[in-house]
Length: 327
Image (tube, rainbow, N blue to C red; front, top):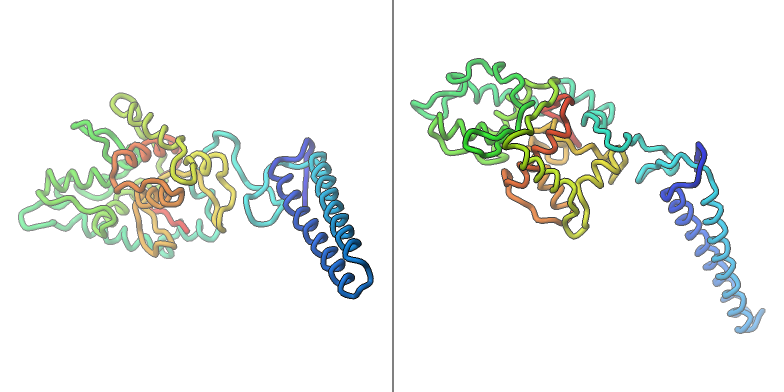
């Protein structure tokens, strides 16, 4: 194991040493026991001597475990280890309270692909959204372009969302699109994760790519921000985990071959390789709820909207990455 720096061993380093030592100790005990059984079979020693030999081997293994555990406490270590993968590899974990762009957690290959529209499959939804923007949803109904003009007029919109609308309802990008669709176009709202809504969301969000998040959290948004923060910090589900435990305390470390991000929504809607398609932030939140065995809410639920507001606030000053590319 590679260690560096000074000070006492971290709990993670100690746990790794103890776990490894336990395996060695039990392997030694098994070997001694097997030898004793063979000796008894061969009538080289009496059964009583076999029992004594086995007990002594177990005591020796326990003593070795205790000695190496004590030694681990005195070893110097850097203190930060990856949650999985190569033991002794320092994890690139930001300092307490630090929030980094989501792209920082991508592999170099995936990040390069996210930055290249010709290799980013999510651009298919951007292209489809640009077509939806100019298409009238029904005879006599105006298109988005007839009210808002060129799609480039949407530049900067998602940096300020979610936001509380005039009616007092917290609306994200999908909610704003559906409000216009109902109030201005006279059409029923588009379903979450439907292709037209994902396409419009991707095309609109792409116009703000690279701009810093600046969601308003004062006034009517303040209590909703507090609600979202409470949800982020509260343990939930059968696994009794809170969002902050993964995305703050262990951001940058590996889990099941993937790197844990800071939990921001700046890349959504995003194309996820595991989905083989585009998906909204609320689809990702539902997957997290499933992961901790918590209640899975419907997309657009008030709790998810409040959480989305808090995530947007955490990302203040960081660039919009949508449409993102994720594993």
